[in-house]
Image (cartoon, rainbow, N blue to C red):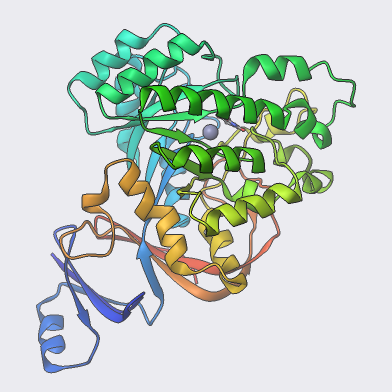
Length: 429
Ligand code: DOR
Ligand code: ZN
């Protein structure tokens, strides 16, 4: 099966991409030559990309696909369709599912469920205070489908929390032994417990006070110090404060420390909560405009390695409950790339977007041999109309969670096609 994508705008210019048996077979200048016409005749299918921009499909390192006992929130079919619509071709699924991914038996259940996925995937397995043997059992045969080991220092749609320094150290050592990245949600439970009784009104507007920034900063400091001792590879998920950025920057100088941010921590802050209410309730919370500035600076100076969506779908009626009962998190797969592309007009360039959404993620999690628009690599691509202006409409999302703090936001840049292993999915233009 030979598929020719004609007139693709790559960073280096307009090219034709030949896809054969799931992979990129060649990339040639689009020059209407006789050679090009001969190639066209050999192909089973030709798609004219019409000068639209083609980038590697996003690898999303932070996705909660749910499924299993939470299919009412999301399942692998709806979640992967949302990923495709967002130009995302690989997702790493988080372990705080029901049942959780903290032993081999449950991992195998998840492996079964994930077979209905239309995008590629890997799993983060969860570490607790008492599953270290299980982690070793899972990692012993070096399975290709494990992305990393996830630790929650605080509860957040999860119950298994690890904050004990000695246990954290043991987990980090196992990660080092099996060469896996430790992914940490760094808000620290003991600290959050103290702030829970603070005297401010219980309202989503104060979420950033209840889950105080100090708790994320303390947790980040704790795990950076331990990683500095153990010398393992550590990945701080959804960094939300300027203080954490400064810490990470410092520790990065002599350690393998990686930093992930989300589009919502980059582009939104607590002020939006007046308007969007619980749709914007998320952990870590939306912070301040000063933090937005610090995250942008960190993007530009290379402190930020990756962007993850933290796609965290919940049932709409759960989110409509009063503040303290409503779960944290909202969908992000379909809004991430359009939101980032919209920033291109303010000096964010497409190369940087590629770096943050696929190149660095692939490097950190060991996928780099297959990722990128190069001969021999899998044809995992997103085709983007960079000039298309449109408005986010959550009611049209493919995810089951049809709400978003970005609902009704105007964006510029639309995913028109997504390719996974050369298979084309088209979206309305
Ligand atoms: O807001 C969040 N939602 N933060 C998390 O850490 C977990 C996530 C979820 O699974 O719902
Ligand atoms: Zn998450």
